[in-house]
Length: 89
Image 1 (tube, rainbow, N blue to C red):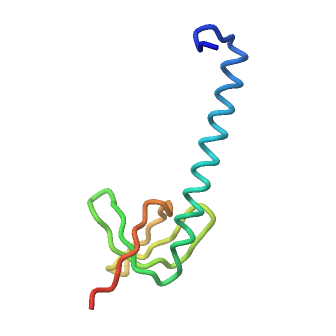
Image 2 (image 1 turned 60 degrees about the horizontal axis):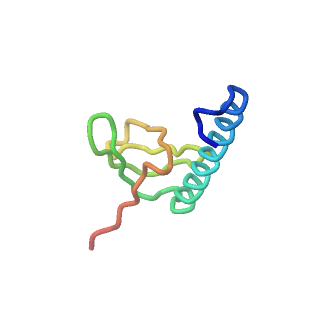
Image 3 (image 1 turned 90 degrees about the vertical axis):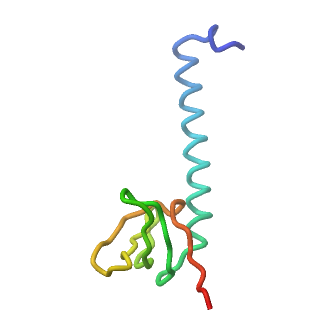
């Protein structure tokens, strides 16, 4: 069936199906990213002013609280945006 031949009701149903699938995929990505994190882990992410370094202080279902490396600013970040840092020895 061509999209041009679909009724409004059919298009709305298709839209709901697509939105549900997008939500499922995002939830999977979120869970995968969360499984890589733990409190105390050093991470980096791209902030508004550039790269931010920090430490994970709290892990929620859909967000992670990161304390900036300056110890003063906290960030609420989506887990899939965080990249763990490896210790250099």
